[in-house]
Length: 494
Image 1 (tube, rainbow, N blue to C red):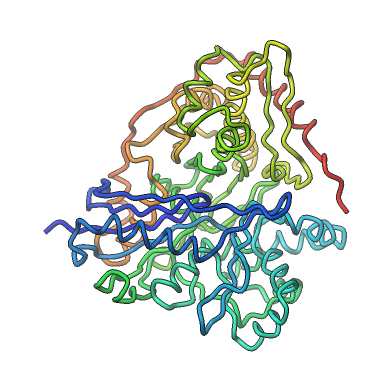
Image 2 (cartoon, rainbow, N blue to C red):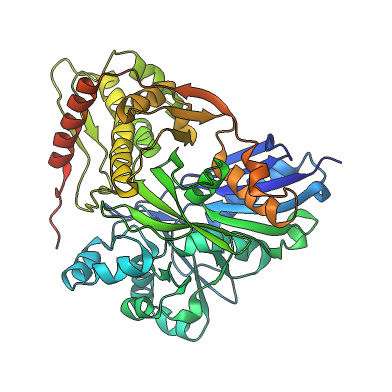
């Protein structure tokens, strides 16, 4: 009897549900976008109930043609750092979810930096002091919702990232896995527990924190009313860690880059945290069978979201998939560089006050040049990450495995390989985030026997090899650096 694993892939702009068979092939898929809310410049919010409604809708949709009893387990993967606080009794959120892209706490982060707290935070968590992570978002909610902190101290409120919110709605359990916990800026990645000094620093009651579990273990079963049959939830991982697992980057030195709303490059760093000296993040990859594995990570805030801006903000394309044809209608960007610092710059710059910039415009510039510059900006930012990663790792990277929606763009993948100077490999299954979550859940229930077994299922669909000369690559990267410098520190800290 054919059996399946259901992966719930809750992303920044859409919720997906994908059913995988034992060979790691997609048996069914459904997706639904949900609203983005921008109440003030630099603020990005989601309605947690809209997230849940979209996720349960696509889950039911993908299962409607399958025997529910053939689904062995559910794996959850999610947009990371996005912060939700809800009432433990009613299950209702007390405020909008503050999204990872949100910059409202940037000034508070500067205050902490001025007070000398950055090293303490990095030493414990492996993270840069930045508004990107959950801790300052959670503090903001507790500071601004009347009575919230007191209710939290009494155990009446729950905090969670999106994985916790989904697990609560599905099973009624309050948990998070080690990979998501490591992105909160509250979790000590050396001791593998919530850090009491950081909880005190941010004035966050421990009573509201979820239990930290492994990435591959049964945490509960879905309420029967949801699907008509209880299904074990057996895998949880943040989207980038799940994608790394799904790309079979199970050995130290292997690298993947996900081209989604943002771009996230992760290198497997082994069984011990690796300290970055180039402003990358040290983060937990996953814990499976009691073994914790760590990653080096570089984060780009605006990847595919830059293309969405061309569609929704400028209106020069009707749908995101149109960008490749428009960009390909010109041989190059015509000297135009677009730095998409709409919400600041992530690694390796960590400048929350940078803003989006277009330079190099002439009277001959048109929308095709801007579209091409937008696509190329994704590759330029990722090239910065790999350069920093190679310095930290002190080992040459021989290939990069690519996934995510924008990885289907051949022009982008070729330009990326040219800038990196190494092959970029696109797998046959590009839904590797969902696949990683499925693998983690399937391993927990014996659907797959081992990591070695799932690694054999990875297959390359296309290999992009560098065709650009060293001089041209150096010239383009130098111009990109000049453009980036012009985008930095545009807003003035309060």
